[in-house]
Every structure is written in C-alpha cells, then in structure tokens.
Length: 263
Image 1: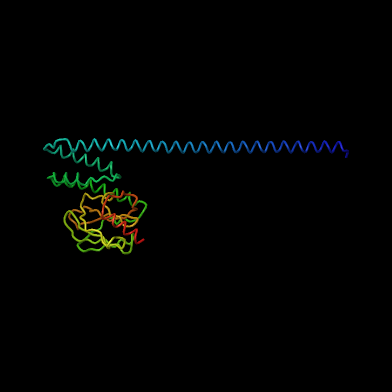
Image 2: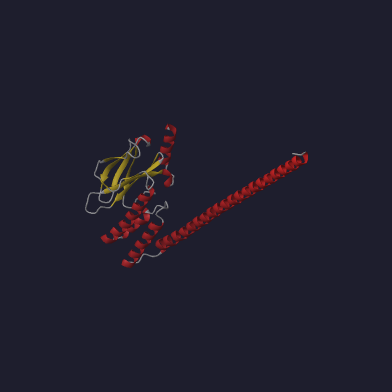
C-alpha cells in the first residue's frame, strides 16, 4: 500500500470521525434543547394550574363571604313576623348557611339556639335538630375520612366510661349526667393537663369542627345524637389537629404549654 493511499485513508477516517462527532454534538444539543423546552412548558403549565387554583379559591372565598353576609344580614335585620311563613323562611336560612359553610369553622350555635327558643311546634323543633344533626354527621365523616376514630352513635348512661384506645390507652370519655336534650361529660387522659378536661355540656347544636378539645396532635369531639324515644346517644370522633383551627382559649394554651414542657 503506497504512502499516498495511506494518507487518503487517514484523511477519510479523520473526516468521518469529525462528521460523526459533529452529528453527535448536534443531536445531543437538540435533545437538551427539547428537554429544556419540555421542562419549561411543564413548569409554565404547573404555574398556570397553581394560578388558576389560587384565583378559583379567591373567587370561592369571595362568593362565600358575600353569601354569608347577605344571608346573615337578612336573618338578623328582617323584622320577625308572626306566622308559619316566617318560621319556615328562617329554618330555610339556617339550612342554607349550615350546609354551605359546614367546612368553615364558624360558630353557628347561637343562631340555632335563638331559633330553637322561638319555635313552639314540636315538628319545627325536630326540623331544626335534623338540620344540625345532618351537619354534625357530615363533619364527623369528613374529619375522620383519613383517620382516626368515629364511634358512630353510642347509647350512654350516667357514669359510663368510654375508652378511646385509638387516641391513647389512658384516654376516656366519662358521662357525668344525662338529660333529655344534653349530656354532661369530661375527658380523662394522660395527654391532658392535670389529667382531665371538662366537664362540658353537649347539646344538639354542637359541631365537631368548632366544638372539640385538643389532645396532643389530635382533637376529640363529642356530639349529641338525636334518638327520639330511646336512650340518649353521643358520637365521639378523634381527628388530626390541623383539620380544625386553634381557638384563643386560655385552658387549651395551658395544655399545649404543659405538653411541650413534658414532651
């Protein structure tokens, strides 16, 4: 093989190698550019989704705020007129507010108690309780959907001691007194300051999202379950603390401080 042939082969190999390197670099560059464009598009899409969700949430809050103000203004400022029509209108108002704001920690008990005091007919009072009971059931289901404990209706009697093992082996709900429309109870727990919380009265217009006791990382709520003509019943639920807001409560702040000191 002559030297000229070898030189030609060498030039050809180098040319092919250079071309191959150029092709590979170009391909890799295009691939990086495509991946970068895809990432940018995905990030932009995610930002658009977050922005849309934020706008939707702000709109929902605004609509809810306007609706709540409109309904409460009507209920509180409209003159009370005698007759069944006014009673039914106010019951409808409470039903609308209760269902539309069942996940909002607004204490509506005073409105229900005020309405209960106005009602004379047993069927109207039963309707009012059914509205409150429906909201309590929905809240109990939603708050415990991912855990921890929902007792369902429990028939109770005086001095009954109910263990809440799902929360803590040392935690009990103790029934102190049973009346026709209320139950007095207290909580005994190693998680509580001084070992006890309460006693407190549980009525038909108590709801888990606003009427609960914080114990460690969880909250415990007791609600009264209407059971006409039978032994009174309660529902006990335990749910994650973050699912309901903290209230400015001196006793609860004291329990939290005690738990932090002894943890």
